Image (cartoon, rainbow over all chains, first blue to last red; front, side):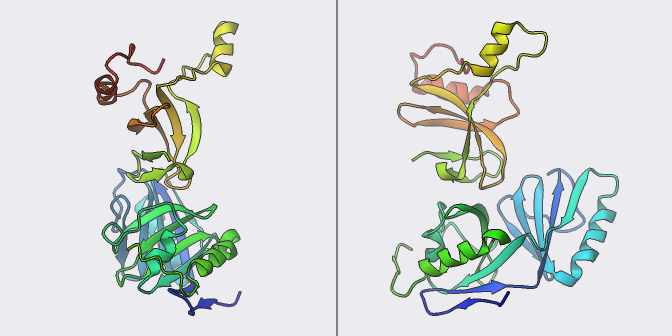
Length: 173
Length: 109
């Protein structure tokens, strides 16, 4: 699919391609030999982003070429520990939303508190966009990243572009 | 609008993020039970106007089941707690008796 970009509105939205994703299910008490994000947070280690998805679930985002190595490392670190690590790179679509009104655009679509006081770099929130499940987090540079299942990526894209139409600032934040 | 605090991920979840799971603290009646008890376990649910204990799933969030104690008439939420409990924790019971002093019985029944 061609990489889409929307730049004519109150926020800039684009597809982010080329990421590999690894889902790890392991009990919350298990120590990992890598940074484990706090509840509701993301953490970064080199080029890898780790998202806290639920008490026993993490999602790693890394360059696609590093997926095999990451899976190997996890299998080694967690040998003998009940866990599930799976390459889910094709499962989800990733978007980048940036600009002064980025939070406002997403707040139009999600039933969560996205005020800048509450939502800062490192924060992750799983919720819904319109009618489908999605997660949102803030990068260290303040840009927002949105993921949703690839099967509903077009729906989410259309919603976000609509919410970012020129002249639709709400001024809530 | 109902907003419940998910005890697993700590987020304030809007009702539209949640999936309802019906009455909480049901006791399963197994193969040895009487027909009446099994029928009751399967079909009979309380539907109180007032304090109620309900199962909810944070379907669009962390995906975990939890239990909420709330008033069905005023939508006041007394608290939420992990689903791995067979009766409400003491702090929830205390909160309910503080807010509803004339209510009898502290359990879900």
